[in-house]
Length: 256
Image (tube, rainbow, N blue to C red):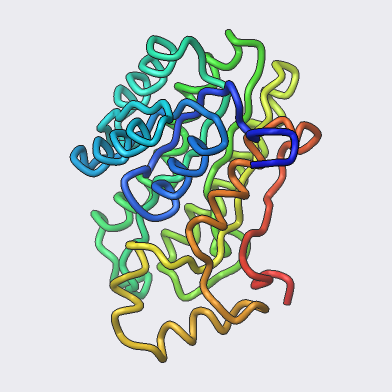
């Protein structure tokens, strides 16, 4: 909460990938900052529990089980925001799929398609649903989750690197096309974060955790709440002159 009051007071926010990790942290933080939140994720029981916890804590939340790869699910999520809360002011398009750590020539078509579908088509589906609602409302703010893999090759799979690069291009194109409608579109360049998505990697032991954390200037992994705070700032009026940006929230990884 800022000195002047909640950062997102009176706003309606849609968050994808809200059942765990960065999305779950964003659900809590956006609600704490005064937003009514529409939470979207494939795992219905988890996203419904998240919405229930926010409600019990005095916040306003509704769960919309859905898959970002399905355009109709994203249309339904936006319609729910408008029907339930009257409008859609901001969105955090965060759902992602890490992909298999397999050499490019050994990847299956199915794995390539799944990685691009979630990480790129998913953002596109979100934007297609969100932008008309924000245009009707006279403006808004959208944040898309990219990655360090969106600005450089990493140890992540080639399709993941390609998708996260493309998210930055899609973000910049949307910012340019919809700026005249009062809509800001930005992206987060996220570093290694201690989330469920990373669990299978970090399970290899302390040495692996140290290797991932050691790539950042700050020599650690991010806490999901740190990413959530950056997304909330970009969704707020405090960042009113920021659009088309790729904000690095990576502990300094891309600074070296």
